[in-house]
Image 1 (tube, rainbow, N blue to C red):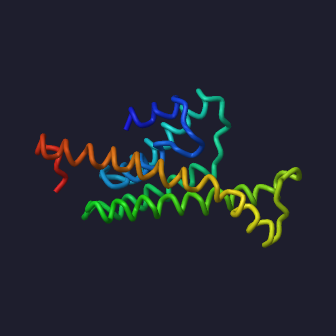
Image 2 (tube, helix red, strand yellow; image 1 turned 135 degrees about the horizontal axis):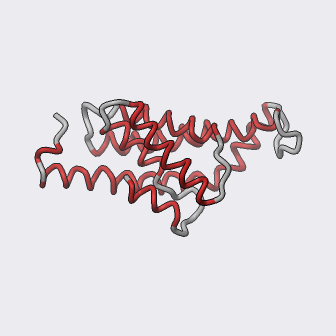
Length: 162
């Protein structure tokens, strides 16, 4: 997971990042949700600061939701369930963060979107071109993290969680 967090520092296409997969993986593998959330938040906060980004609470909230989705994988981490959880996490992140962008207009008068239903729809429509990158990045990094762990479990039986 540390290596995945460090990947945020390498050049990458917009929205192709390992954090969503880390959140899903942490939720699925760590015994306590709080530890998984804290690890994702810490990775985000440190990398946000080092990259010069302003931490945005709605983004952290969305990733906490992805940790919750990962927690649902604890008893059965089949490839299909993991793939479905990855897509669900991507969709959740899209819905929550873009709602936050739109709702932020109530706090920031210079918002691009009016505080109307039409403004909300316009916000979601404007975000669609970035969504395929989110799906791609989450799928790629989810496959690497869960696939790597499955390989490690076979090689080192002590890693098996039951």
